[in-house]
Image (cartoon, rainbow, N blue to C red):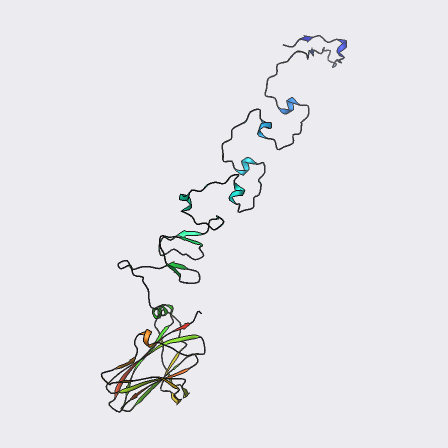
Length: 320
């Protein structure tokens, strides 16, 4: 314990006016102090500390910290980070990736993951993807923004397709004109097909069949007329489409010149009853734009005849 002695003149301590005699503690002897003490209790004035301080400087012994820690836990104020950051910027050392992990992702030449998708079923849209994870796949574009995979018939595994003419039906660009006519002996029935002056060309099949007499069917290109005749009704094969044909059909024109004859067939000989109207591969004609086509059916002085007219075409603009 500290020793306490009376005050003496040598201590030069003034009385406080109360008549009490001060007591002096001998500072050469240790005094017991109970703590912990605050900085105010320890110091007469605050001592500034420059930082940041390390954990060693702050503590006598290290304190374990469980992580990971958030940016708020690590710093007094948040530090903005502009990204994206590379793996090198994020880590002090590279992190190995096993081949099992790499099999599940696709990477570019720099090792950066690319946009990829597992092709699950026919609803998967492949547009804008840099990669596709599949076992085996054929795919194609159905619009400017949608890419889909091809489908196979489940029974035969044959590729399911439609003909291009059938596709044009779905697209609302496939049309027809059909009608029937009676032709007297030596009589003539004439039709015009007139194409517009555009690059949306008609892919045409001219079909005519006859019964009763004997008729010649002729097709001319580049005819001239003084009158087109009666405008006939052209039907869109897709009844849900509002598109109309740009190629027009007429009946009973006033012909000035025939033009260049493209074909002639005689019906009624050797039981031949139809002209044209066959397969597109063999009978389709891509009509010339801004041109008049004359289709003439003439009975050959045998018997009155009945004919059926069937003009079938789709309109298409070449992509290339």
